[in-house]
Picture: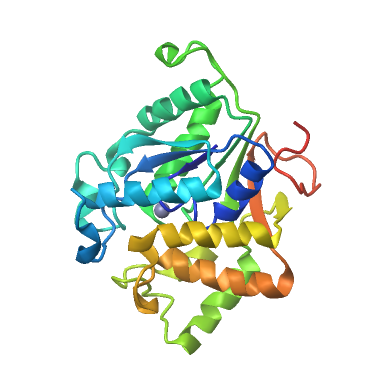
Length: 284
Ligand SMILES: [Zn+2]
């Protein structure tokens, strides 16, 4: 199960790995914290939809099919938007929900779906999106609580997932990317459609790599097909591409030279040896 913040997080970054395991016969689910309502989209794309959330839900349905997911669920929070935006103040915004409450909702899905392996965002939220950070914190909390039958008894019998990972980027590659960005007319301190993203924040944290999973090219192709389903986030001119689209494209370029790997840090159980895992289901 991948626990992510927005419809498209299952595809950018995670798409290839989820497709790989789905293809191997694993039942792969996406638990999505919000409906991505705070994203900005081309108004023409909204035709026929009641809201941005509806449009993005439709895109997710198509992407999930391409990736081979067994299903996806929404936790029911509202997209909190980027740090400092008006959306932060909305009472239903994910960042305004207490972590124990969010964890409780996640526990319910853990106990229903019974995932062996769970993946979420890293503690810095990738490029720092507040919903990514909130999703990370709540998922970590849910892993600590789900196996305790005295907690959340209304959510069903206790169930303990065996492993929790967060998907991470190679620090070294990120550093190179951020250094090269000005050559492509991009300012890493003021990135994205609204110039409100400081990508150099991604260099503040260097997470240890505990698992490196090699991916065959066919899974990158499936991921690209899923990316194309998220029209509102990647469509149009290159300048209008979503932030994850840009980062994704860069890593794809790197992959062509150095081979396709996805990196993970294991959060549970705690890593005691320096042995690098090559499969998230290793030792299960
Ligand atoms: Zn996201």
